[in-house]
Image 1 (cartoon, rainbow, N blue to C red):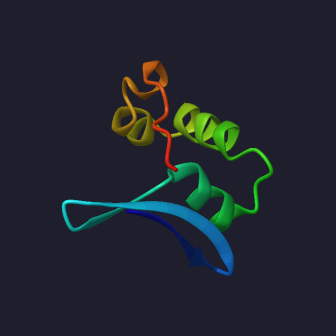
Image 2: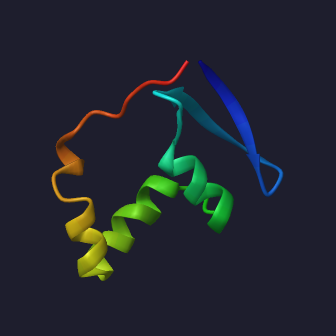
Image 3: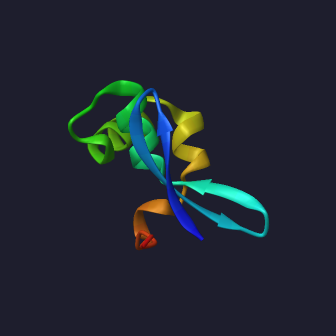
Length: 68
């Protein structure tokens, strides 16, 4: 089941899977930072912070999952 959640009055896409909520990371970044380009914001963050780069290692080669 997919639905929208509100975070700071901004819509954030999420889906329920195995009784857990999974959120779209770029939507959360957009809500937290007001960034017009959340994907670019994440890329720059990973370049500046080695721990973030390690956490996302290999993520650049993956296709994003589509939520309905």
